[in-house]
Length: 119
Length: 111
Image (cartoon, rainbow over all chains, first blue to last red; front, side, top):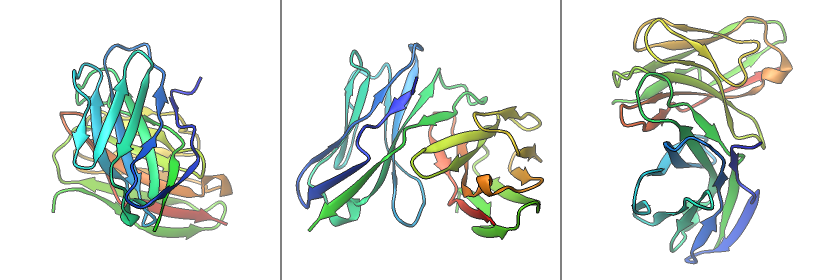
């Protein structure tokens, strides 16, 4: 079974509109972390936002917020007021287990969503 | 500047050739990782190193070897390159808080 599922291969959104990128995950570990990355055409992986499984509130970072629904095992990324520079691939990823800094921080990635912002 | 440095950025190999991808981090982190990225498949873990002197297989280790030379450096070796190893390779390290940092990537083409 897929551990991270991103069901939207591509999305087109009008500039200045909000956009939601879907991510569902599967784990039996009570301790896990969820990440979103942006990959522009230049290829680098840019960290956007993180949500821990025990965090009480949804994570926010500027125009990015994470709609974390633990019971549904979903961690959707919301981008408010989209900009042309938001056009990129977006990856959801999960780290299972707690943080130990001894090798168990490996990430499982989804297949990504290509977001295109239309002027 | 602190970060993760990968070399080379681009490489073209002929089938059967060998090469080593280099990765160095100056963040004093214990853990380091090698991922490959293929179209439509996201990033997949090849090998990782929890600390200096230790390495472990990830999801797709076949055809690769790694060396954790010291705390800073973690190299990935292709002994006999195959076209199926055409990919973009990312090295990463992780802070004690679990935040991953990625290198800029190496685009490898095997012809």
